[in-house]
Length: 475
Image (cartoon, rainbow, N blue to C red; front, side, top):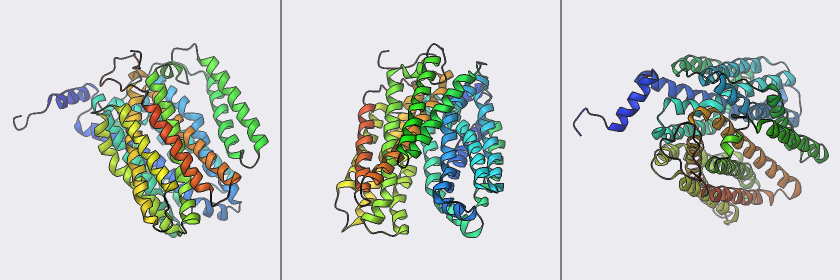
């Protein structure tokens, strides 16, 4: 090819960006704004986990009560993901995404100024609502900004941002706490949030459908997920009350599905879930995140109680997992744009299962360093699975339903993470502290193996799916 010429694909990409009013600099700023918003949300969650003991001492509350700082945030996320996705489709992705960043940033200031635990929990609920808009619509906006043929690459960079934020969060939180009080953990979000708000102006302002939100359905959705999270939290300590909460969650969910089923674009994306490829991808995502969370929660206990490692060494051993995700995700993104995403995500699930299974069964007491290649295998597998499966979910949905796809993807992820944490908590309640971690790793391996098997049932979408037509195994 002559020097200075461009490939036909790059020319097509440039023309597509120009049709949206995106020149090269604005295009890059638009992508950066989405990735930076993801960093803002994920980094805050990772930092908050580290700060719980300090917050408990400062506010004179018990460690168990301080956990509500995390629970409130996760509850708000689950309650708001699908409504934020629907609102984005109605009034425009950029408008709701920007409002989410603004709310998250303002709530961070409220967190920093909170005089008591109740105020802090309320501010964290607001943070979760803002974070839900970012998480639900981030990849939907990337799909607007990036041509479909490069969506896997964009999702790969998104995975890098999330992995590095998750890995760096504990260290950044510890550094801030060593030099300042806990409110500064939330105050530092203000400058980054303001920068992201400025950058969101580069995002294309694509109009919405003007479809009205059904407020009763939104209330049912919020009630169902709130009851689910609270019931899951109470299950190990107050099983009767937990059972009542979980039953209420199930009843509300049934009522919501019945109410939304006749609609063309339901709040719960039943229209997308009717397509085999999308449905199997969502199930696989929930299973994978449940298995990954079970493994990640069990690992530090196994390292400290089973292998006799101190806290610092345990943290270093575990860092290999997110760092491998960060290194492998760009490669996984490029690969997902070129090969079958169904088989790529299946291979990823099998690799995670192999790594977790080896960590559970291999005799590591004489050589705990062997755990590093096992966790690296998990990180590599997670990169392949997550990027390929997410690409499959989004390209299995029509472009105008990208918001709903993002909401469902986030809901599946958080549902899986909640299930994985509950499974591990129950294991520690029902078995000894010595046996529970290895059992948890084994359960994590089984769940990720199931996720890999489910992925084989999906069908990789075409590079450019027809507008308005979901791609599944029947088309």
